Image (cartoon, rainbow, N blue to C red; front, side, top):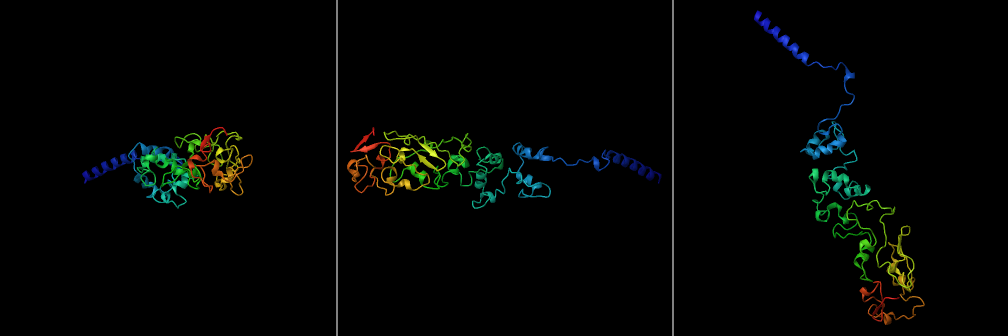
Length: 326
């Protein structure tokens, strides 16, 4: 019996030592921190540091979901990842549905095509990065063209990959030629073409109405004896003024067409009668209706252009020869 009592006494003493080692200096609730500090993968500043942690470790999105729920949008343990302004929503559905208000193209447009947020996860060239998802792997973007940063992504055609706006036919006519002339105008002859999306002035130009137009094409400034003024673009009326291409030449009408207008296709707008479309220039030009007599090879008896290469090319074709002083 005595041995049993001695053993129990020793155990009680030892248990007392254990309890003493577990005591805390916290006496009451005032000793507790007011706001717990977020630790773990986030560090002291979760908003700033969680992306860095991704790049410097083998952390996967599944580990984020432990606290932020399966879709990383809500949880009783942690806030949504999509309320910070950095992330744009559920990539698996909303962002890739063209008709959705949350389609990533529309969201980027609202942000003036600032892709720096995308690059944080998908890498600078948007080839995958820590998200392990290339933006060129969807079938919409092509890596060889620059992926989502290709020119035709914002102003072009996603199928034909032609790099000019498709809303109307005017860009196509200028760049590819039309029914009246083979003359083409390159993008750089009206706009400053950037080498990269991020080039200064590309997305931050001074024109509040959109694209900046400079009309620096040599053709637009073709010098003739009847030329007046220098080529310029009027942003208020969206019209090209004082350009050779539309009548700023000897015996021309000095027509200033609206960029989105329809009347410039009539022959009479550049030289002749704008009301009727008759191409016969006013006096002192010779007043005869048989234009083909002097301009054979360019126009036929019906008034149709038969040699588009000789029309609107900066030169006057008369009696089969090109006149340089006119």
